[in-house]
Image (cartoon, rainbow, N blue to C red; front, side, top):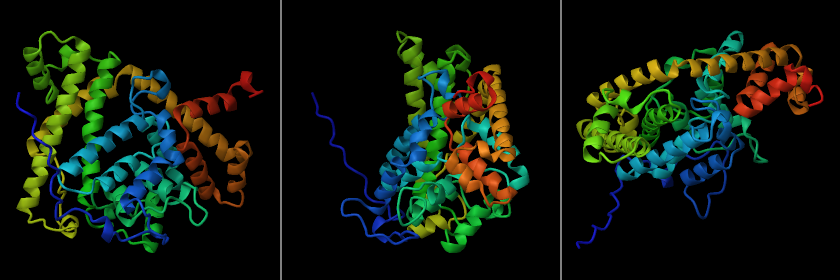
Length: 397
């Protein structure tokens, strides 16, 4: 029997970020003796309170609906795994890609997009709410774990990836919700008009790969649609048909798991091929070339993007608008709206430390503090807090 070929790690790409040449941190710190700056960023994110709270924040289904559905924590770990794998295969810095991936959802409030929509509505008179901005606020201000600075004091490259992993953001800076980004950028220029590193772009594409595949998986587990209904759906359909022909003995559970695994592999292969094509076509030779390319370097091919759009359309029609999901969204929005307005009108019912911070603030300042408090809640905590505040039978709680 022939032995398997020995794995050969890829050569480092010339356009990868070099941790030994990091632009550093806003607050100077001695370097670690055991980790690169980007690995240290990753570890700080993992140990943050905001990261732990992701275990009971919604992806699509509310966290208490079942242990088998994705939460923000399991999703973030899956994104990080995909990002690290792609970055490694492309010869990039996989620690940086993983750090950006682990950070990308830290600013999400409870109840997923429904929670974000409601907080944005509540905050409309005070600048609005954006989960990407909130993520940045978490890692630069709201996490308080170190005696010499607020936030996590992440490297320039990780902060850049957090705020512009989807591309330049200068078109957003006039939005009131982005004022904290403008303020921070005045102290520490993140070059908001350029693209981010290839590693940050890998994290963004890994997010797309993870949530589309795993929403298919969760939708099947929840019984919102069946495997036979996916047979003619773009991207997943051909994989299912080929797998059924190849392995007709597989039951629905194994068919679901194997088809999702193969779809992830198909999308990863496409991203790698398209990225290498764009690097060659654009003459990308350095990390600075990535930032100045004028378009995304890490991307899906046109054919994959078209197929993915069709899959997303199916998920929007059949899953995200399903009555069970709509009911959850409706309940979630009421919970957050009622708590927001109560805390604004009666700040004395806030926990003591938050009430103390609310003193001597104007209306907009109090609103942002209330928003920070609510955005940090898990699904379960938000439900319990709402019950204690509005249910008479829980007065003794």
